Picture 1 (cartoon, rainbow, N blue to C red):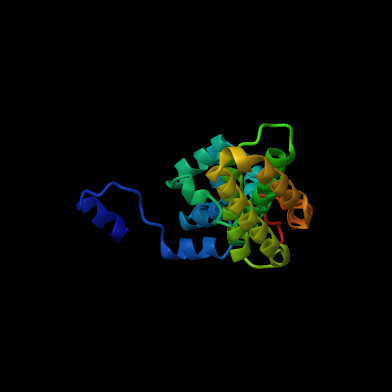
Picture 2 (cartoon, rainbow, N blue to C red):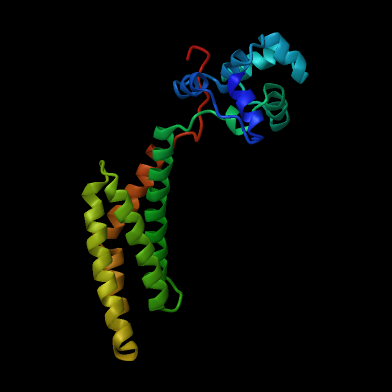
Amino acid sequence: EDLRAGRAALGYDGPEPVPGTVAHRIADGENPVRVWREHRGLKAIELARATGMSAPYLSEIETGKKDGTFRTMAAIAEVLGVSLDDLAPPADEEGRRARERRALIDGVGAQIRKLATLVTGPVDFNTAAVRRAVTRLAADAVALKAQGGSLDSWLDEVLDGIRAVLDLVDRAEGDIIGTARTARLELEEIVSGPRFARAAAVTAEAAAEEETPLYAAPSAAD
C-alpha cells in the first residue's frame, strides 16, 4: 500500500512492479493465476464469480490441466489488476533450447536437400544459388556444432564438404564458361558423397528423435 501511495504521489501511472514474493513463486514453477489470486487475497470461488467462470474451470487453469482462452485470461487479468504477460508461465529454458536445436537440425537437413537439388537436379546450374544455399548451411552447421552433443561427429564432415563446395563455386565464377561444366560434375560428386549423404540421413533421424511438444502443461501433481 505504501508503494502504491508513493507511486500515486509521484504521478506515476505505469505498470505496477511485480512483488518479489510473486516473482519468486512463479519462477519456482507455481501457476501465475493462483499466485496472483492469492497475492490479491481472493478465494478461488471469488475470482471465478468475478470473471463469470465456474470454480472447477478455474481450478483446471490453476493446476495446468487446461489453458484458458484469450477471453478468459483477459477477464482474469482485469480482475487481478495485472497484464496478460503477468499471467504467462515462466519461459521453459530447456524447451527453448530444444526448439532451437530442432530448428537448426531441420535447417541443416533442408539446406542439404536444397543444395542437392541445385547441383544434381534438373534446374540450370546457378553458382549464386549454390553459394546462398551452402552459406546458409554453413551458418546452421556452425551454430549446431556450438551446442555440442552427439551430432558433432558428422558436422565436421559437413563443414569440410562446405569448404570444398565454396572452393568449386569460386573457381566456376572465375571462369564461368570454361569451368562451370567441370565444377558442376565435381559438385555432384561432393554433394552425393558420404559427407552430405550421411548428414542428410542423420538430420532426419535426429529431428524425429528430438520431436517434443512446444509446451507441456504441468500435471496436477506438479
